[in-house]
Length: 459
Ligand code: ARG
Image (cartoon, rainbow, N blue to C red; front, side, top):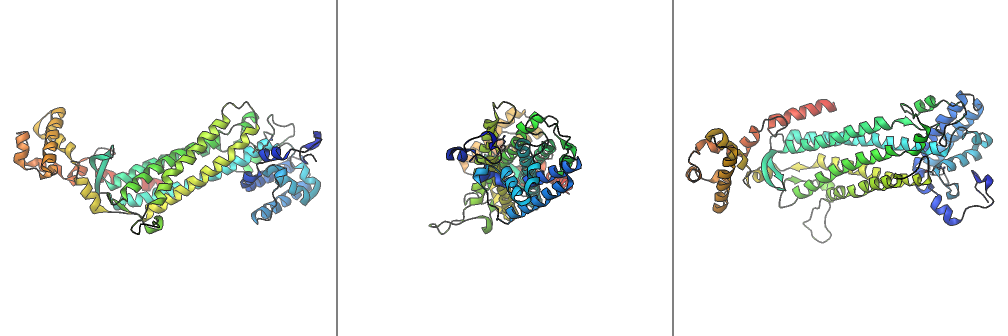
């Protein structure tokens, strides 16, 4: 038998394989709540504009609420023959309220319906992501404040570069996740327009009120072009871009936590709550959550590439290709939100090991740049010459198996006669960080100012 929703011109029903490739209900049932919200807004509008009788709209409203509670209770029987969430809901509505159900689809198509549902769903994920990012930022600020003046090595090429403060390093991530938050808010503001009422592609001759449905669904306005409304998925791509960039930031931080929690570094201790053991090696405490966060970018960015590839080359307006927009976004959203929550938990629980950080900061000639700067300032050397003199001193210390502050004054004067006792003041890591007072620099005073600015911003 042919399809009960669109089978009028068909003599035979679909092949089983056709049904298998065509049905999206297996995944788009996740849009049930959004679908019913959209239908309720549409039904109320149809009555307000006189397109359907008030009594029919009331039956639709009650029926839709019943369908929603059946789905929420897990009592709803989804059918692949009915293809997708839209037709599953409508078919059930028909058994509940009879003919009035058939009037719900007046002035509407599944094309604007699915575009509306998916926008609402993505908007919910953006809102959830905003909450998660805020929680992560707050957890990072607590870490930054606790160790605003704790000294640790700063790295380039993962080689010791210059001392920085723990607070400064934490605040670097606050800036990154802060930009993710701002990107998210931009994306949300841009995507918050309603496709509903665009109908199949060309709009409708029924006197619908798109402002009314837009407002009922929390959209700022209806989308201005019906072809665009049903056929672009850039809002989902922007969501995936926001999530991908943020997952990339999460991945970098996760990598640092993996390194920092190793016995060789001991910069941080992760809590038992966010670590796992080994079934063979009794001593092990593994940073699995950090490793999984490090890896999640793979599927999140993969979703971004997949949807971009689905959309490229599609002619206007709707094509069934666009049904392939959902699963990847669902998966990316789930994993991004989970990663954010796991990172927030780890950051909240972890403790930085101040002594290890400081010991590491003091090794590896981390204050060589301070020495070169001293030669420029106090001995009047051009920076290039100061760089060379300092390099010679580093080589000497390396040969002696000591660090720069351990060289004697006469050792130093053997390399350059104008070096005086005062040089030792700049060779200590605390003096080094305290001196970097330029805006955005690692000096504790700068870091505390940035912490204060962010606390005010986050309220
Ligand atoms: N399940 C479809 C999707 O997800 C809904 C829209 C179907 N529209 C159509 N003209 N076949 O894209």
